[in-house]
Image 1 (spheres, rainbow, N blue to C red):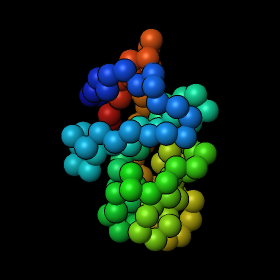
Image 2 (cartoon, helix red, strand yellow):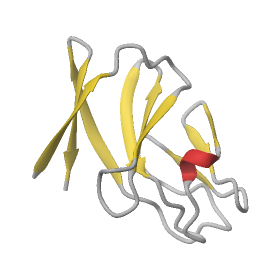
Image 3 (cartoon, rainbow, N blue to C red):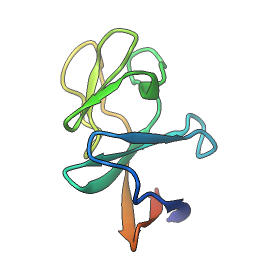
Image 4 (spheres, rainbow, N blue to C red):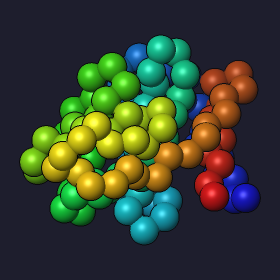
Length: 103
């Protein structure tokens, strides 16, 4: 399993996210939900749109293209138009410093 140091994310508040374009083929969106960091691939399973150009409300990120929604804690899609879930990743945070676990 690959680990990627994301750095200090202690300034990321609930409902905010940060994009890491240089991780993987599509990049990764790291979100803070209920005090916890979680991460998903920055790509909608419906039409290859960047989820980071959409909005985050609670634990759901909404694709800007057709409104598909995904739970950023699990990657699960919340129904049509998205046919499939997206990849989600574990993020550990120690003293504000975050590590992303891929794979």
